[in-house]
Length: 593
Ligand SMILES: [Zn+2]
Image 1 (cartoon, helix red, strand yellow):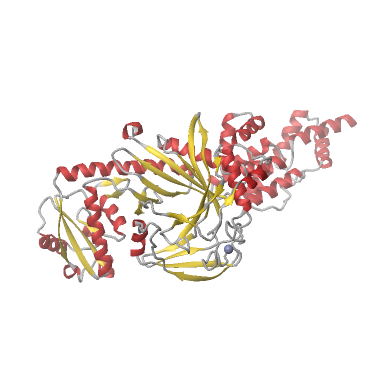
Image 2 (tube, protein in one colour):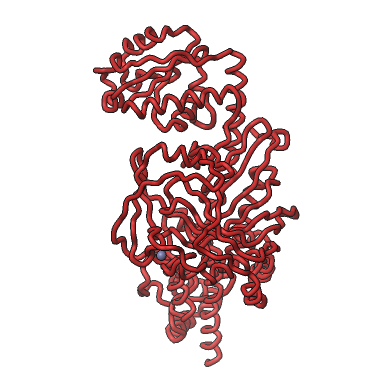
């Protein structure tokens, strides 16, 4: 189904987060590039604090209610007292600020006069202090994507959060090596009119950053947050799309979800659906042969939903039903009457008994939650809250990205009370930094495109290489060999990848080095990469000119013509002979005669 995004009132803006390539972190001297060894861990609990305006953020409060334990892993090269929040932040990393200003230049953004470091409240435990330090460095820029000017409203320099290792209902485990690595956040205006365009804009920004050579690369070093809404739906913040290529599909899925929820809302009101009574049913479930129920059964509460038949099972997006939405929202698993409950091992008689105590009518549905008492009670309140919202609207939320590229509930949208000044740090005047970078040239993506076109003479090839993750490898390879060989080697690497063979960048450099030293031929590059073995075995050793001449002489004795000589030798020694060498050898042998 192709959606008409203009008709839907689609609006979208992007936040691109990109880690900078600096030696040290943003507010301490720990390494931003090397973690070192894990040497321990600490445990914390976080409290939501009220802002200076006295409000407590709803998202923060919600997290606090989960009463989670946070474990932080410590690493020798990348953790000090600053990450542990036991020491105030040091002065801002000058290198990082310079890079941020160079990036601001790239997008024609206006730098601020003074950088004011702020604290932004963090509610998920991903920072030991409970806030993230962030500073506006420039505003009012733009980027051109296929001839359309996309305003870049703001560019922030901020610290990376701690990386999550694992989580369950009791605790979350984070690693502190990532915390405090400098990154820029680049925010576009919400002028993007389709998911496809969102992907193109994300790509253009991401690759513009990458060609500067001033940013980190590799998995996790760039991520996209998407703000998206449709007229009848709600604004949703989708956090952390990892692959630029996924941006389009993630947004499409979110819009489909919102459309389904709008349909659901109409149906709920048309049918005059109602939340009915709730009943404790642990007695009915006790002794069931359903493993999942008997293993987790503490108390159990069933909720009657009048005229809801079929709506809990309604598919919202892909395989996700409304029942699943409820489960994500309340943070607990639940079962409902639109599912085949017997497939969980729940006996028919028990199902009938639940219907009986709820006094269930033909068009009604029910759901039930089981587990520890306080968790069940909290979850049930959440479920009722979410169902009430469904009668009325699509809720505005912060959502995460699942493996199947649908989104899932993370928390309510944060309120406005999230930012306040960092009192440990003074404002930084920007003029000296601008002076310093004034004459330093930063490579622009347009210049790179022009250069690539000169090298490869083919627009499609230029696009393919510039927008591929192998572009930095291409750049290295062409230094060692030539643009053409670099390009064809990349093709080979891609082919190997499709076969499931992942090639390390260092290995590629090593092989190319052997080639440029004349030890192997072009044709052997792919073989060597595929073998993952960098020993020059006899079957791929490049033949010396003397050896070649000997072979040529033998064939001349047999009265072979030049063409026959070439085809004969190439047939037998394809991996060991460059055709140019062979032609030269023939010429030399014949000249001597
Ligand atoms: Zn540190």
